[in-house]
Image (tube, rainbow, N blue to C red; front, side, top):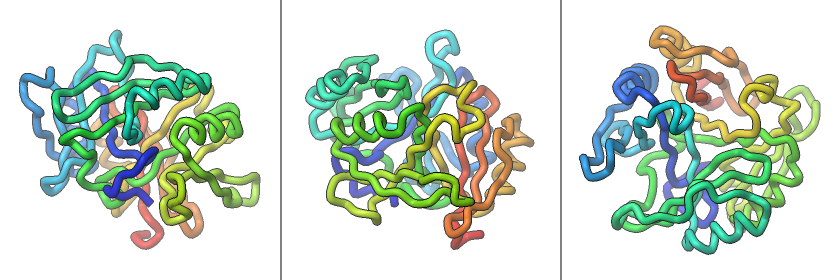
Length: 264
């Protein structure tokens, strides 16, 4: 499970690039109950989505020609420069070299060898998201990739991730789950699936999909549809896990909802 006790290689931030921040505020406020707080003019329009006063994501308006609308997952590192070097040494790409964000921390934009984008965050005064693993907050991440073995090798080498597998629903293949080194099954925070298991991979390519918790998956999808989102995968049950759905927000950024089995 995700936790705010961040360690090397664990997700510690997520943010949205959108061409319309005002529209995004309306959409995510209506679907997930988020408020938006500006970080101030000195941060170039960057802001935080908050739930009950706790930061659950970041957001920034960017022209579509500068960056496609998308969610980005950030992974913790204690040394941004060393991690950037490890990304390159293991076949990945450093899109933007490590850069300081005032005294808050240092960030790096990267892509794994298959092209799935992600970022790293070396905490300064900002240690990361203030709430995770609950309704309205980041609760899971999933990598779609053409080569699971290559992906686990890359992230294992760069971040020290360890893996375990569980049968896929219906008994067709195995689902690979990852956790930080030495954290065991209780530290699972993401899954890795082959591209052929994702019917939308032809249009999205290799990518990280972020899941946000909800107390009612069907209601979240209905709100998304009403506010201009597009349903990619209708609410679906996973035995023993919960109910999930995948949507695009009104500008094309993809995300998923997860209603835990305990809330179903």
